[in-house]
Image (cartoon, rainbow over all chains, first blue to last red; front, side):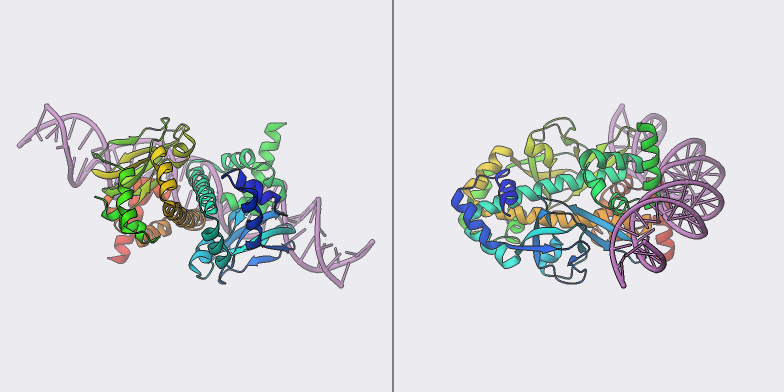
Length: 194
Length: 194
DNA sequence: GAAAAGACTTGATCTAGATTAAGAGCACAA
DNA sequence: TTGTGCTCTTAATCTAGATCAAGTCTTTTC
């Protein structure tokens, strides 16, 4: 249950076995079924969730009723509506299980307690957040500089597995293109590639 | 010189006056003139810079020679090519002073020392990074869901001053639209709003 | 295991914003 | 103070990708 989390933490900071053991008490393991919502937009986001197994997405719905995928989170990733979680304000995003998932949930009080009792986790989260910023900036640049096809090929390079686990319309939404365009691009790429 | 930085830190974490005093020793104050580069893409980014006065931008240049503004940083903001700074790899971004600027530069060794000696700064940076992620996610959603005009109006709401300090072509680039389109939008908005 | 509901494909048409191309307004350097 | 080169504006044209509209193929569900 906790191996993946520990591994992830160890990849960023050094922790002792005692700390490792202590860590576990802050988390609430939980399962969600495919299509189940971890968070409904408008509610307060209660958890910062570490994905142990399965695939999750966060997304918004705009005025015209179009969905926009903000993030995919597979095994080893964290997901939350961070604004809502931190400020305890109404969530802008929905969070939904794309596959059956197992997560480790951290409530805000539990997270605060953990950060006070295990200062090394403060460093872990700082590093995690920093890497996330680097990735998000690259995504903005890609969105501004690449064609639809280039964006798709880039995603295939960075997260090759994801493309086959998430429905195409959600992949399209993540890329900021329509499902029709993605379908056409995939056809072209397949023809070129073979 | 350090007031703005201290104020910014105090807005996120509680620090003592002793810590406040100690803090200063890690930073190198520096000035850059308008149009001067703080970082050339391809170099290793040596600093994480806190802007005390003036305006800075970071940007990439794509294959076709088009610039893409990644970030503006005015007084009270941090700027860096974080990927390059952290991993000591070649920078993807250029960083340039838009106005004459005063910054407080943190080298990587100085930052590491600071984080070890003043653990409260670990928390400060975690919180800073978290907020940055929230902002970046909102930017991605805006890029995917709004029209060019809506993106411009949103920017006017969020950073009303910035629009008049940065050249219009750079504002356009930040929004992911062409300078021509921005010019037309500004005209329309002015006419509507009169 | 039939049928209803989604998810994906394919084609025709449309449009927001890009591109191309001049001019007009400014700013700073000589 | 006068160019010389930027930056911004305006107009004409073009195009990548959106929208609209059927179909077909796959899952669910009962």
